[in-house]
Length: 155
Image (cartoon, rainbow, N blue to C red; front, top):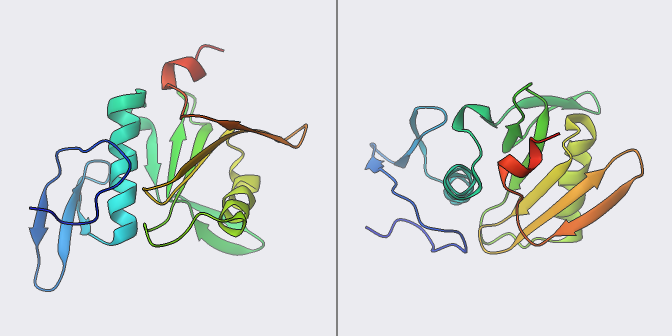
């Protein structure tokens, strides 16, 4: 069954069910069905991509983690943590119809000021932008792909 738009991410085995009014997708991290929105479709693809293709441990991925920014409660789409529980990668997912612009990149960078992850991934499922962020030197390095988890945890 073709549920949603095909994305520029590897396919994965997903389980979709119909509730009274919504399509639901099984979330392996939250271990429950969640409403299948276009943004959730992108997020689920990214979760499976990080686990299956980049080696990120499922237990170190945190969905919709709360954080405070400018006295307001915000939620991150996805954060990958290192073994000590420190943020490694902040992921901001948009639905495929939302273009990745300087404004969306600024939103992710702004969230990362409180999260402090050295890597930032911004995706709408069709376009992906990954940066290595050095907050002390205030520099960004654009990466061609998301680094493998093993390459980040050797320090």
